[in-house]
Image (cartoon, rainbow, N blue to C red; front, side, top):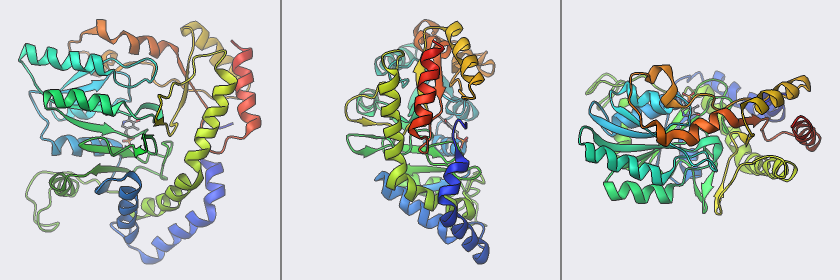
Length: 374
Ligand SMILES: *Cc1c(COP(=O)(O)O)cnc(C)c1O
């Protein structure tokens, strides 16, 4: 059994994907081909955002977004401590300071009340300039943007939505990757919408941001590639990856997102009496990048994980270490008191197989194995 069965998906979409790749090989426009433009247009339309810029990966997308907002030394950027390292790494790379914020243990996403406190504390201390919030759509569920936006508006901060795991999710019908002043996503193969290598995208409604980020992604180009007006990056999605993503986006939109939600519902029915299953607030839809349950403690998790492994069921721990405990951030000072929900989750979360091609029999086998090894 695969944790995320990319091979099964490929076998189902093979004809379309192979045809799409072949066309790129025939055209031989490997960089910046027609498919790249078409994909950006379709992604913008899917997310309901004015502009989409494809790029090299989800980490570059965050870096380019931070550069666009002028984030640098002396700035404070508020980041949930329970996330993938890139959400925080990119802030440090720009020379800014990460202020880690605890998460709501029910949604795994940034806690807006604690966010408010963290911002007001930084303002009171007066050492750093509060600049923006990176809110992460962890495990496929959008962060609580309506509430976060109230907090950021109160202090005049901007929002970057790290939608690397969130593509396809929504709040009251509004799609993930449309909530930030700038939003980013990743097409790493295991993400809800993945390509067959690295890829990413950046979304914004703001024309000026879009123009600046388009320049930053291509060596700080001016009127054309050999007119360089700022220091930038080389970050692009190649044509073959765009050609792979086009049929995959159509499958995602036509049935995969629906099927992911059916599978999550089935898991919930089978598991909710025995375990803490994911909580999806009213009006929210997750794209289920992960299906993550909460166990009693570390010992129980180790026991269950070992038993499942014996049954041939792969599981993962997202994430074992919060950002404020990462060695790379050991030089930072934190208000660790307030980060205890994330610390607690790191010891108790367990992610189980989740992809749109899981059949009922397998779901039941996984659920029964979990209950039996409890
Ligand atoms: C995967 C991921 C990224 C980085 O994406 P890459 O394409 O691997 O660079 C950033 N943030 C989060 C939350 C992620 O899960």
